[in-house]
Image 1 (spheres, rainbow, N blue to C red):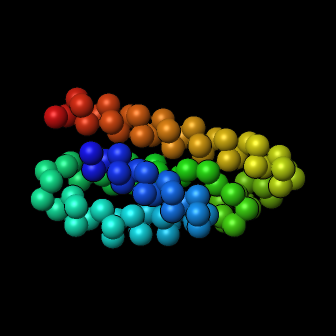
Image 2 (cartoon, helix red, strand yellow):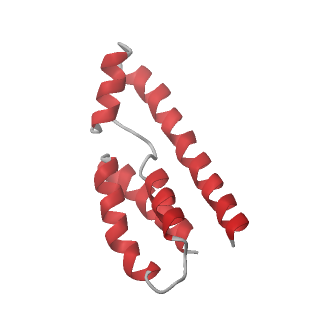
Length: 105
């Protein structure tokens, strides 16, 4: 399933690199040829790729640094809070997009 593949690729790139924008744009380039003739809903593909790009924020992510500075947390506290938060956001986003896909199809 293209939607699950897009989420997984974006999530793995995000974990490896740390930048959400790079993860989403790179995934789009990888998945676009596969999605071109597959009949997948492109709007859902955009949503699932974006939610995959949220997966596991860590120290070399600008959003991580903003979260840390804004809430005056230590790196350890930010890893426990921000990273856990975006992890659940990513999983929830995946589940909701897959549910929408079932409802639309």
